[in-house]
Image (cartoon, rainbow, N blue to C red; front, top):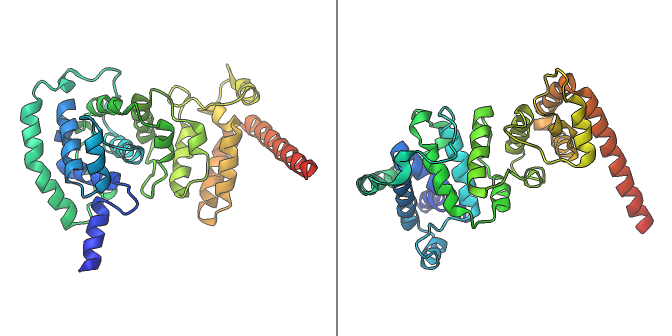
Length: 310
């Protein structure tokens, strides 16, 4: 019995402090209605946090002056979750929709309070793995409202939010999932997803590989890789040329290549990395060749400097 109780507690408030696990599970049980407008969504988050058995939140509530006390790790899970369940809806708009102004927030807040207990029951009575149980229509989740509320967390360290995508359940399912994830991140961070934080070593290597795979598959209008002058010059060789390469700067990036090569050393991922490279070699072989040469020269130079320093 103690073992079962621990399992339930971990689903709500894990020992790791990653309370985002419990939050997204409860939101899934609450359903799309909790994003009806910004006031309702904020109230849902506050109520969930009040119920979570986590001393960190109790302390944070005293310090937050009315703000919702969520940290970077929880925000990363929220972004991943809403990008997944909203995968079939419309684009996240620059301005939240008129219905997100919270004019009828009181009625919806009452409904949220009524259904919150049922949501907690759902979490306690089954595994409630939302990653395998996305039943609601994607268009029902109001991502305009979610993006508006994410703006409340601009004070957070958004580089750490990006780094916190490295959690066990993280996986990019398709290009639409990636587009929404990037859009929601931009709304909160007021900046693009930083390349440095997604090309370092992750614990969830498969999740990282799915992220890199789809970043390379989307055009610069969706994600613009941050590259240096040499890498930009290599990528520019395809400017004005008919090509099937959606994002040349990605393949010109030494950080991307280094991470893919590192991931390829892991046997379970080797075949998948190979398939990604085949796609790149068929669409922009010259860029990849130049990038690999530059990478080899950079590694050789670093090794020589280390030897001379000794």
